[in-house]
Image (tube, rainbow, N blue to C red):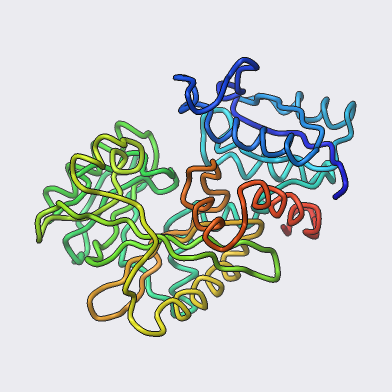
Length: 342
């Protein structure tokens, strides 16, 4: 295996301290992804350099010109505090003709906008929840008839940011109240989408033109009373104690109907290509009691720490964490880079 110079791009507040000692260190939770990726790269024998980025592209160019990395390992999820701007950072790498890991600019643009991605998938006859967008700064007028209950969330934020139990709304009055609150809190557009009752599944896809679908993960709600909404709120995603208290857990999907894993794999590959994704992505699905599969959203460059869903799925498929990181590097090096096209 060729030794590479790998430049890691991380948020300026997430550069792991040099004295971080691993999982027993109380600081590890904050830096888990960056620490895991850095260690995997070093263990693979690659020369690794980390730079923290906030709102200035100059350090990226400076390091690329001076160090000439073979590839950039992109762990940025925003730029200048705006999650939509990660698209511009990757476009900048394209203009510098520097290979990078993860998704290309067009795939980021298409999938980050939850409304745009749903429109594209609908055009290709893929089931998505019905939805309505509420632009920030625009007064809510008369609404069309909506399929309540619905979930109100940010149009572009990921990681369940802004999603709570109160995001589940059953009528227009609740919807208006939640949209107003989200506008005030997030300072951005909101989307209300139809709540699909059923099993919540997560599918990681790896590849550029040739795709591999990893084993299906599921978010399981063991203690939630029947009839109550089951959804991945911010607390569900990020609060381990909350999940334990309510019997919520991530597992590999069990007892899926005959032929369903194959059907889901085919569906996810189609969606991945429709949205022009590359590198790796996680698709969030709902499977209802009638056996219908809905794509909720696509997440390019999903969380990639050793204890994240994509890493668990890779391990189940026979890929150790270090091999997963190497696969991501190889995909970044082999992808065709065309500025403005992705």
